[in-house]
Length: 66
Image (cartoon, rainbow, N blue to C red; front, top):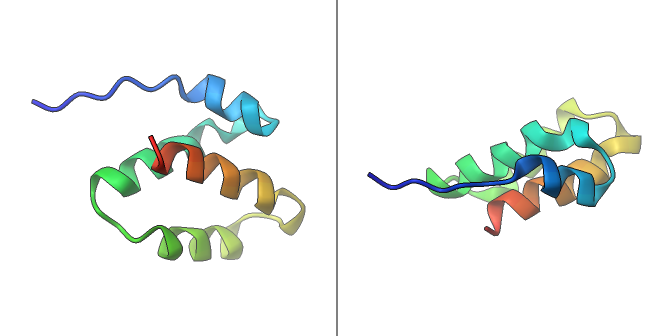
């Protein structure tokens, strides 16, 4: 069994919003399932308001790069 403990709230707060917890976790899952980060970032562009995109991209990358 492969377990990874992640303080997603702490990472989300580092990018400016505790609401970004789910995006941090998306990054973790994308990496663990070997899904191309660029595809997820493109999906973020299509679903996240532009003013929040940079924050969410950083949150995703923090999770992805664990």
